[in-house]
Image (cartoon, rainbow, N blue to C red; front, side, top):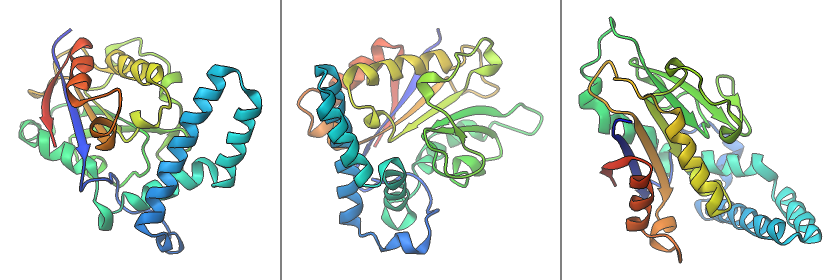
Length: 243
């Protein structure tokens, strides 16, 4: 397997990833309230996973009720869209395009487009989607607009031909949504199976664009930036860019 690039991004000022697609009434949610809702959702998912492992069905039911009381996945996505608006950070796919722009400049209309899989897509109008050299496939657990397939990446059928694989996979604020370490590891392993092993029309190796909240590597008891790089290297990736 040829070497692949790991796009590991630590979000500081870029705590957001996609262009604004929310309605004006949703914009009333303050930055602080947005962060609180997102943080609470992740904490509840983590607590639910722990309760499931312990076989505590009553606790699981209680947490599910709390999640629904907070608005469930739809409210989380609304907060994510708002928190990821241009006014609050911008579109992380712009970072991806900026990073691979030298290679994209090699592309011309006689070549086939580069296949991109965007996992956890919230918009069909981000920078990646507006780049003519890219053919973007978008999936999300709870699709909110046409052009985004409702699908769990972990249940997506494995590719049987290289034409079903991708030159670039984007995991932007997706890996941190998985509540346990085993699941996160399995998601990273699965990415390898979906990346093409053949040469690209341009000088771009198979690429994983990984976006994580900075707290996941700076304030974690179990994960450091060095440890994350070791895990990715074990899967055959090497670090190409980081912010």
